[in-house]
Length: 283
Picture 1: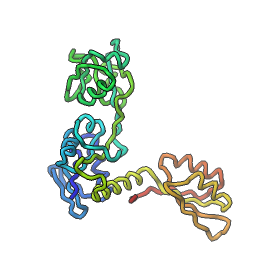
Picture 2: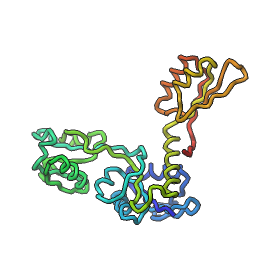
Picture 3: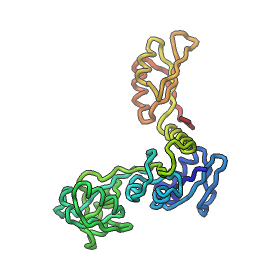
Picture 4: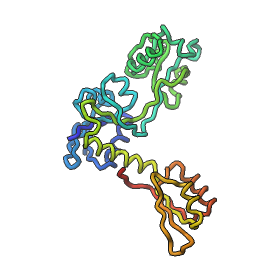
């Protein structure tokens, strides 16, 4: 039975639960459940603190888990990224006071950096030959400069509003682009059958989120031009219609490109274009 760790709270929790549910797995029925057995699908779900998931997976106590790439790298464990899941995106950046002369990466040398991700920051700076005093704080790191604990911070940034309100400005390149990922234990073979089933199901759900089915009619002589516009996930289905001058095309297309594709198809003579959401997919 495959043992899977999922976040019990935080911004990755609900999207992770929804992903697993859409993939056909059983979830807990109340918030007090810490373990859920799903014998029909050959898994056990463990609801754990997001900060701890990489540790459990890295030690092999749990086979796989869903966590953030930033949390994995900061854990220092042997857990390995298996698949990016496409949600929970964030950027990890340096920020210094507006009036500070710290404006480039080299300026961090010898300074105090406050962060909740001390190992990640230490490794990043060390790999670039920069030595700094990394101060670990569990939260609200933007207050550390004002209180005189640090000279600058390294933290997750979304809009940057919190940093601006604290009198801080972002500088230098991003330390890391993070998102939700599936990780596995080094003790679990990459070709493990249960892991392959899980990965295939998750990819199917992610594909269903990213693609839609597009159906349209096209004059037979324009089929090649239309198919060039919508080559599809693999290859479109082309079927003859009762009127031999027309053909019907069904194809999977990226959801984000639908409007442009419809415009392009109308230009080459397509008609009766219908777009349908994909409810489920098994890759």
